[in-house]
Image (cartoon, rainbow, N blue to C red; front, side):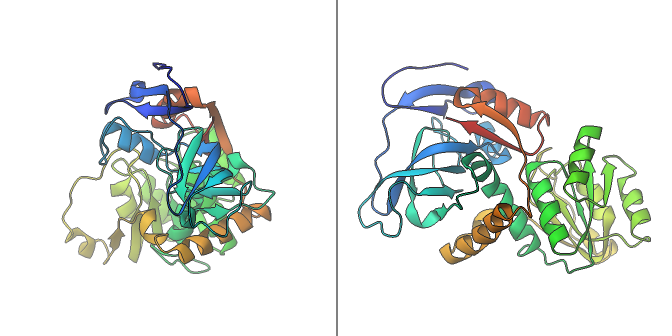
Length: 329
């Protein structure tokens, strides 16, 4: 990673689209909160797959820019007309622009207050994953108590939280993982059955469900798992494709869904489930409430210094991580 020294706060910049090596530690001017914004001193910044998609140019982005949308920290200044948030209050957001930095200006209405017993590293690496898990269960699909669901990447950041929330709702959970270590983590989260990826995955799922398949498949892996997801789904079931960790799913003929059992496939994104500030507050309140009460445990599997952003991206893309990943400025 290149290091550039000027004056101001430290931040990571994406200098051009490419691999982790395009992440550079630099210094930039401190941001000034505008109308309706608060200035947050970052205590922790989450590292997420979407950050890697943007860095590679899979999603629209214009270098140079500071990556990162998920942070937790302390309000140190407020712009004009901000009410209801005071200096020194701890907040989190998934709507930061330039979260891989020591200071971030954020719209006040896009922040949520943090309970005292939820530390920055937990909040800063669980809000995006936790809110994703929340809308997956109550938004993009609506499995009912007693239903069986399949969660791919069960030991990942979303998978671990999703499994715990699903068990709190009385669901039976089957997960997929790639190693013995990840199997242990998935079982600790409450998974009823843990399977390995492979061509016989759908057959194993059918065996566990008396041949019927699962009500909902939650697939954040994408290209490598999508066909098995379709084959694992029960008649009139739903495949929720919410990510593409292994690459995007190629185009396919929708008519296939008829022959597979009148299946539904949806490709949701978190932004559409938290656009309304009241809905954001509701989802975040339920998430952090369950964490504060100890009903959901968030595993921060990796912590890196801000200067370790390239290593964090490299490990995430190599699937060497478990749980969530966070930068500590």
